[in-house]
Length: 202
Image 1 (tube, rainbow, N blue to C red):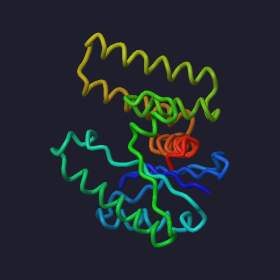
Image 2 (image 1 turned 90 degrees about the vertical axis):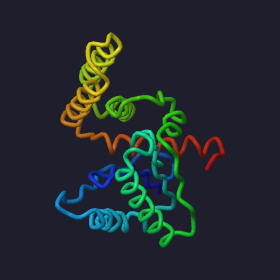
Image 3 (image 1 turned 120 degrees about the horizontal axis):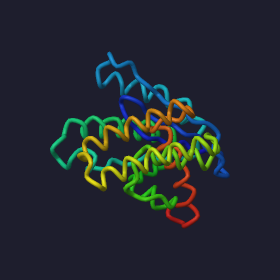
């Protein structure tokens, strides 16, 4: 079994795949917001531990500095790095096999998705691939995204406003087909593992 992870201390996306590439299950790990950061990390690792025991391979979405605005937002990068380190350490305590780490730009390229796609677009890609939304729902999602991208292109609003609107689209998609953006990223990351294996890259 492969376990694919999109790590975050607020909500970690998890996707489990059979060895033939079939998606078996996906879910989120959501620590209590009241927990201290180290407690959140411990909670996530504790929740992952039984799945690590069952898995034979792991792929983790790597940390992309661009998300944090380069080195400006060191705190966010530091926290995610600590979580990633704790998760990888737990994996190595369970298996004598290195984890695979690929950045979002790499995973998206492997599956044929634009590297600049917003998380809402990844949700649509996953929902369409696995039938988690009807044709009408997919048309609605795509129209919403196209409208936001078109408005940004015409400079009807700023990039910051676009990001806010797209986050709302992402939340809407989650409400419609029970697929949050973190799980969608984890699923895409898992699919990329099998694409990379076909190419002899992992």
